[in-house]
Each structure stands twice: as C-alpha cells, then as structure tokens.
Length: 297
Image 1: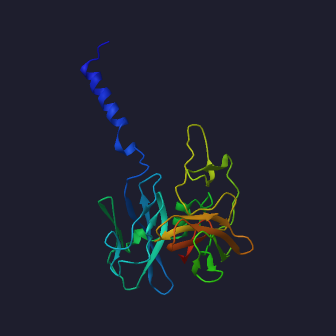
Image 2 (image 1 turned 120 degrees about the vertical axis):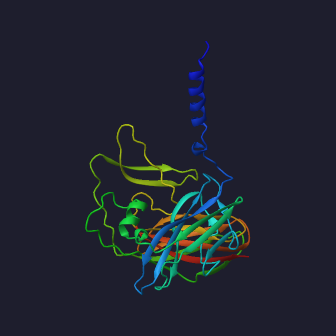
Image 3 (image 1 turned 135 degrees about the vertical axis):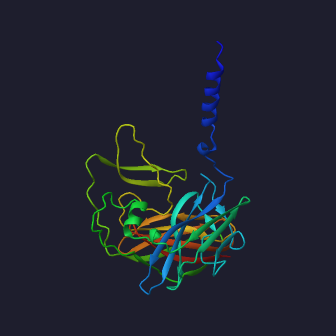
C-alpha cells in the first residue's frame, strides 16, 4: 500500500520524536553537573551555601579530583566538595560556609567531565533561602505538611574513636557512630488510599518510596537519592564514598538504623590508598555529615 507524502511526513516526525536524545538513558559516558540547592542562615550571622549534583549516568560512578576540573571559587579550589559522584541526582551533598558580609557575590562550583564544563552559582538571593519545609518537600519527609511547621533540629553525630583510621589491605574496618536527635519529625498516620512502597535498585539495595498515593494510571516514582532512610526507619545513618581513593569502597551495610544511640557498619577497600568517607545522620528531613579518612596499607 502506498503512503501519501502527508502521512510519510507524519511518520518521520513520530519516528524522530521516539528517537529524541531526551528519552535516551545512558548507562555510562555522560558528565556530572553541579547544582546549587540554596542557602541557610547560621546563628553567628554567617551563611551556608548548599550544593548537590546531577551525574547524568544511570550506572557509572565518576571520580573528579580537586583541581582545574573540580574547584570552588573564591577561596578554593578545595572547599571540601566531593570528588566521587554517585549516579543520578544527589541533593544537599555538602555545604560551604561564607561570612556574614558576603553580600551579593557568587560562590561558583565548576566541574569538567568528558570535555564539558558546567558551573553552579551560589548566591544569597532571598528566593534561594532553605528552610525545614524545603528539605521536607525534597527529601520525602512526612506526607502531609502542616502550618505552622513542626520544629525540627538536625541530628548530631560523633565518631566512636578517631576520625583518622589505618587498616591493612584485605581487612574490613569497623566504624561506629553515636547519633542523637530531638525526636522530630514525628511519624504521622498515612492518608487514606496511600500505601508504603519499596523496590530494589540496580545495586540490589532497598529503595524507600514511603507513603505514596496511588491510583489508576499513576506510576510510583523511584528515588534517586543514595542518602535516604530504609522503610520503617525514623533515624538512621548513611555512609558514602566521598573523596579520593584509587579503588572502590564497599559498606556492609551502607544504611543503618540508629539503635540505642549508635549505628555500626564495616567497610572494605579494593586497593591500598587513602580514602575519604562521609556519614550522614538523617532524621528523614535534615542531615548532619561526619567525615572520616582511612589509610589502607
């Protein structure tokens, strides 16, 4: 059957749309883009510039050492930003403190990967101010947001023992942290028609979706966050490979519930070297980081 030129043109348009690059999921080979999340006020009058990132790969984790390809200015290039980037979108990864007289200057994080340069510009514009409700909405806190907002302070976290460790290659290292919290946010009853959903990601880890209203034709979203609580956990710790190191890092487990004020894990390394690890104490909304350096002999 012959097709008119009108329908041939329509077919080509539909085919082009189906092959649009925006719909292609790349496992590897893509770049990492820095993201400015917003800013916070500190009690001493200073401010925190908060950053995250988007690793455009669906599988590949990327390493970018501090230097021309990973720098923050002014005051850099090293402002304790990550050099190891997990796949996809990771929010609220780190903070950079700036003085109270910062004014209208920009704090610029530059990343260069795969020949592509991307920059995130941090500024104190009022629209970018972060509060608990912003964290709650972005991190999947309690499903209902009440006004006035529930008071909530970030959890505290301390290392049991030194934050500078040495271990022989091939031996797992035990890490224990102490965590305290104010008990907020308080768990809230699920709304009628909601269900608790969990799935497995490509690493085989449980992905907590939380209470999600479902209905005909609605898809259940999958979180991309590495730092998150497992289902049923109100206060927990997530360990991540944060900076440096020539090999890979394995946590067993990566996410731990806080029990009696403590959370323990074991970490192993594929090669000798120096590795920067970070633990995030997490109440489901607010995060507090703790950095640990491990030298593997």
